[in-house]
Length: 121
Image (cartoon, rainbow, N blue to C red; front, top):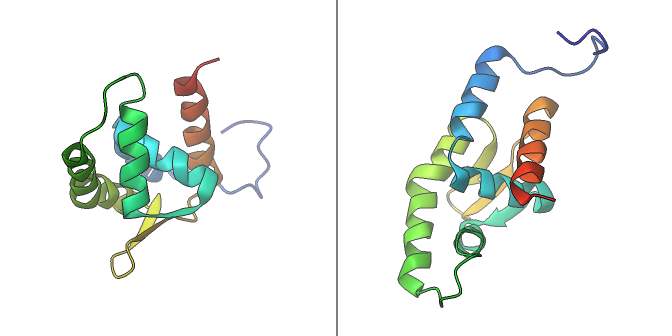
């Protein structure tokens, strides 16, 4: 424990941190989290657009609709469920909305630092 951390600060259990690290080891899931840190909530469709665009940012080619559809399916079937299981996001399947969960501050800080590191100078 950090000697300067006050006992009143919310902390994350080792199991919660393990789950978060496992969930965030995939760049696609980190991209979802980066967007949600900024916007708090988004539709699954919006997230598919964002992840597709960010994943192909260095690509000067036109992104095919089927590529975006593949991202949508991967998000819906793989990535969002893993983030939900790690209590990082919530997903309302009825409305298709994905929101940042009320995860502990250390998880949010981890994500913010990862975003800054991946974005570069």
